[in-house]
Image (spheres, helix red, strand yellow):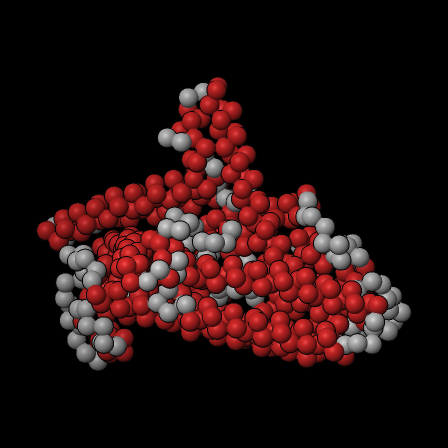
Length: 283
Length: 283
């Protein structure tokens, strides 16, 4: 192993991320297994409850770990180089949007009730939970979500949107503040002096500010997850966590595969074109 | 030149960015020269006016060019791999915040009036432009900004904040929508089938949506720039553009230098540590 390329803070952050991804892969296996057992022995909720608790705690530990690694280098987390561009485009404050957890629940309910017919509208589901139509219990436990549970999830959604907006606003102010940083002051000076220690200190402070924001966002992610789990039954919570983790892993994988495929087809085009014209070799 | 590594869309986007950076470097030289001439011949505003117009048009052309390159690969612009993490942390919809232009004006005014004493508060400046204190005309043209001009800039600031917020909200909705994408539907399925063409199409659609948002943000950036230039005198506009471009170039450079320095010091630590313990070689 080349020590010079592996010991930077970025590498430690990347290692921490991949460790988290492998923990999530284990979670997926465990959740799958537990849900299968649940189908054959529907009275034993205890094991599922325990597993859900472990998974929420693991997420909290991951957040703590990356917070420890964020000092003066937090900006790496806002668009990690170990993610695909696609994955980064879904990133909010170094992670997923807490509201996206709730959207996963809505989508799961629709999926459980209507299968993968994406043209089915949410209004049809609401007719069902309102009682104007009978609930059709298909293969997902989410089809058993009650109107009261859905109401609580909806209240949570509205609260989380507001909290997300507050953090987004703080980030916007931090971005605007670049105009007042010493790096800017040197840019305004007529002599355009080299930036020095003052700039370095200001950037450190900016990174610290970002770390505070990420920790705040992580707190909201964990808080939202915990509140969702409180509202759901253990079996629903397990189904939700399984879907959420699969989505995360799929997005990571699909982004990577897509980038590789694009790169390969661009390379193939270039090679094919090289035979016809010299120009294509230099684009 | 290795054709396989240079012909992808990402490389074209990167080339477009570096071309823009070299155009900006030329702008800085031209603005500097024009402002020097202005000091010796303060009646000739015509050349400065022309230069400001060219620079705004160049920005518009750059936006058009990268919009052409954003089709199905727009997410690359939201956290470009050719930027440092620091620079990416200031990014908003693939570029700078339009409100940051206005913050540069405020900072320039303060700087022109008070030098680089960052502890000087904006309230002191307002006492000056309100007339409660005499305006001290120091070396920056921005010290000559009138109360009326500042009022117009302030109105513009409020309008731009609202427009920025609208675009930010649209982006948030787009991020939340991931839960309804076919990639998610496959994740919800019990069999966890491989994602296929439907997922690829959905990601293409997502990329197109991002391209629309980036174009909207670019429109707001250009619109804000044009309105600022309308409010300022040609010499003030030139001074503003010079500062804004220097800030952009400095941020790019400083982020790069900082990352290099961090990497070198991490490497040096690793090499030094390797002599003491085997563990440090694998972190």
